[in-house]
Amino acid sequence: MTDDLPLTSRSLPIALLRAREKVMGPIRAMLADAGVTEQQWRVLRVLNEEGPLEPTHIADRACLLLPSLTRILQKLEQSGLISRRSHPADRRRQIIEITTNGTQIIRANLPVSIAQAERIRSQLGPEKHELLLDLLNDLKNLEA
Image (cartoon, rainbow, N blue to C red; front, side, top):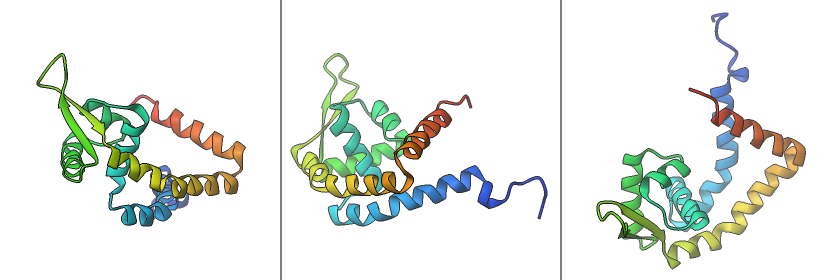
């Protein structure tokens, strides 16, 4: 044991991983039943929320690396959950859009997702929940 490292119970990276598992654990069953992965769900959520986007914007908003997103988009397109078209101003660029089937997956699974979010919010309490979101957004915005 070294005195330089914080205890794992006070380690930010480990605490974030544990919190992620607590939040995502119950969601994984829902996603498995829906036939989509966590990453595919994030892409569909972003497209549903923001409308048609270029892949670089999707990658940023869904917290994905662009090479990973390329594979995810291929699977989603094969499943009929997204469609692609050329950008009107630059045919080398693409615009990705959620399809009706993709929207149906979001709508069908939204109650479970919302219930999970509400469970966490009620257990933390609204003030702590909002503070946690604020702190996580502050952390995201820190300089590297």
